Length: 232
Length: 232
DNA sequence: GGGTGAACGTACTAGATAGTTACTTATACG
DNA sequence: CGTATAAGTAACTATCTAGTACGTTCACCC
Image (cartoon, rainbow over all chains, first blue to last red; front, side, top):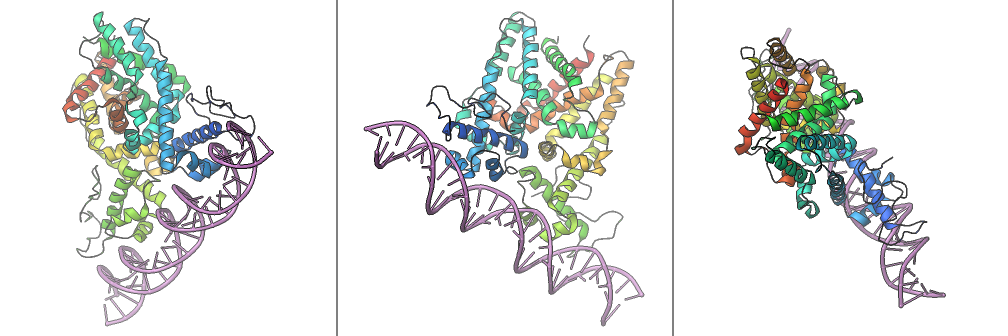
């Protein structure tokens, strides 16, 4: 019901805890790690679904196999729980991004691949995109205060920077493009497609996430980015 | 304090009502139109600021020169007030869009102009962008139910369609581009820049709305769209 | 100059909601 | 084996919040 949509560090669902190095969990009854991660998983989904103010601590507790007391036992307050959800979501996504390997491709193909992977990520993790939207409504006040997330650089940007450097060295890409700007171009397209799906559909009667149009938008994004990078 | 950031139909602030054809408002004391529009203006800002669940009816009332009773008198419920805010916001934006006149420009210049005007709109009406984000968190359930907004087509899309037709007729644009896709490209860039400003800044330490970078992003968008339309 | 209805204010209520207290049970460990 | 402590439950409370009951005032019209 409330499994996380990005790979969690502790396994999201049924009884998947069994944390690697730590204390072996007792098979029966109580299990701190499992309880904590189950609360986190349910809370992630609830906050993503209803927003911070719209989510209810009582309902999060009800969807867990434990009680509200445990939420306060492990997380202290609704706000701290929300921050934990944000941190968990961001670290999970970063772990995914770090896996992408495009060093062996030529610059143009590497850019297409990066754009496609980003595109797929956004489609595969709607809860994450929703959490980001929600956090922007709050002007990123929680994100800015989190010291866990403060220094956390974006691996996608590092990869992008290296691709651009190679492309420039080979004389295939323009010299004056900023990696962050390219990232904005890619993210803007992907985020808009998922985050604004509902109002867009209400007005234009077009579901941007219709599977029939998926490859069309995926290649369109690659085209747009490459054309920008290779323009005279 | 709470003036609307898009042109309202009734004048937002002090005592600007004095509705055109209707009954001349008494200069003193009570004035239905003024009260109603003042509630709407304050509510627009509050909902945009805090979201639907986060906004408080009591606080909206407090920031008005009238009382909570009047909110329920004119709008019925918190939800109906929110729908009224949405409808007011969308009709206001549409009225603005209808003004753009690019028929006298050649297709390429017209596209640049359309992109630039869209770009400016997003920057000038942050409350509208926030309301759209909030409505997307709610999966556009209110927008979809509003019969006022149901048939309301997007004038920007009509303009875009005509520009593309002219460009194709003159052999300057590719034949296989969909106006809605071009709209996605433009909107995606503009919406991302404003709506995701805060989390983006927290992670990349770059304010996408820094005035020093404004023209850079404005021309970048025009370049990207034109390159997409004119690619071999 | 008084009747009428729309516009408005005050004070209240029922229910929801974040957070707490008091108490119980399982588990690790000397 | 027994006890300290981590893990857990259920019931409670203070406060907040959407919505309402009821009374009052103003503008208008005859």
